Image 1 (spheres, rainbow, N blue to C red):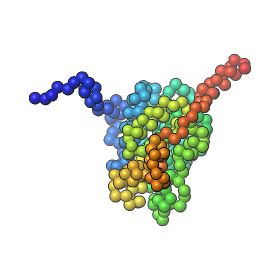
Image 2: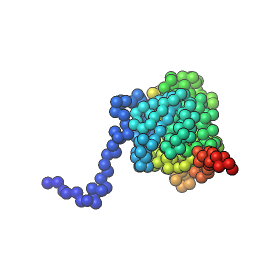
Image 3: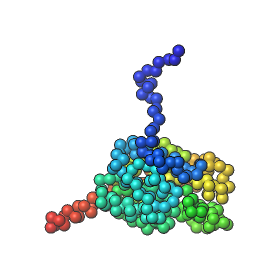
Image 4: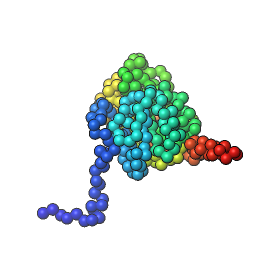
Length: 287
């Protein structure tokens, strides 16, 4: 005979999250490779959106070109799949026309920081209310495995056969220096932590940038001799990062060379759409 479950225990039993209510089933299965972390990031984003209580019809999800930029095709929001590197100006136009909407940009490190680098710094400078999720896998995974602006020194790629000689960008430092008012980092490995970080980014008024470390086993992993997708996640995301909440408690040797996870920068300053609307109103009143 089974033991009856008390009401208190029933409340503690977690109910599986219903991802289907946010997805377009006719667009599945997705194109991402086995071991790619993009699906993990997508699920964390959907849980954060659900937790924020956002209505699907009030969300615009915008992307450029790349593996991560295929995300809008799978979700049941207002979606826009745009040109390579141009997701942020498209998103800016949507936010200016419909400031009431929650506009989210999904982009890769190459899409955002190479061809789209100029748009990235100016979106941060303006502090327009966009949530920018940068899927950082340190390689161009869709177009042949070329090195990207975040590829580590010495990394092998189809365009750096003898090792990358260009120092990598730190996405968070660029965002902070350019004026973003919320800057954070997460990983596909720390999925529950990532969900909380994205949720906080969605709640922030202004340009929110979340750099998400997300391994590409097909190109970066194979060319750089990682044994498996699991090995990549453990090496690059688990062992290669440390939480900002723990960093002060750890000895220097446990922190050296590791990237920080969590909210790295958060301030308040006027949001661009509100400033623009205020200026229009003043001039309309003859002030």
